Length: 267
Image 1 (cartoon, rainbow, N blue to C red):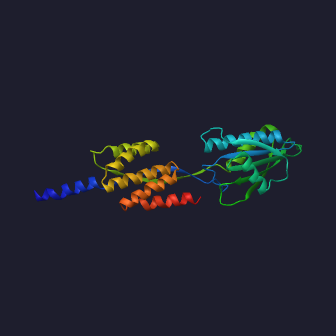
Image 2: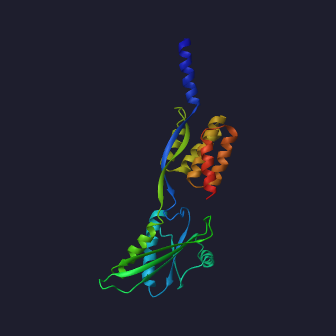
Image 3: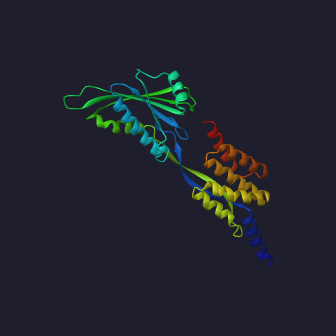
């Protein structure tokens, strides 16, 4: 009988120890412009010039491309017009943020040249970008030139300008705790919700598990709740639940989530 004791104890300990489930998710990164547009509202402003019709069409096309990337296609980017000017100053950008109440302002202006003998039309495009949520209080300026065949190419110009600001993506690992105890299928239920991006439902399950105890399971459930809030971009609630987990147990995954939360808060 003694030979059976060790395997039985090992099995019981495994059931009491938290297991780690890794989720692999695509995480949005800053665009090639270096400007991070995630979680921010945007507006595109054009100038009232002889080419204002072309500019408005370009801005509309640019907005659609950015909306597809950042807002799932919802039409949430504001379109505005201002009087013509050679450039837009930082003070003017501040005023546009105040007037429009958007986080990021793009000022787009293209100037069409004379039609060439080969029917091509030269175009010079300037773009000023101000990110009121960014770390630098400055106007980022971009310039480009091209040839078009007709004013109908405005859509292509707007789309090409937008590509510089599209998200880059990186696969990251997000870890959750569960207990391999078949009598407690709630852990599996919480994981299933998280895997399906149903974080609110997962939180509901883990909150019930956090009430049940003991401390190790309460801590593991609290950590999972913190991770779910982090994935929902509610870092304040994530920090609160992670602190609760830390107060109960020294969980191995806790430090990594603290690092992520701190990095998020420093953006």
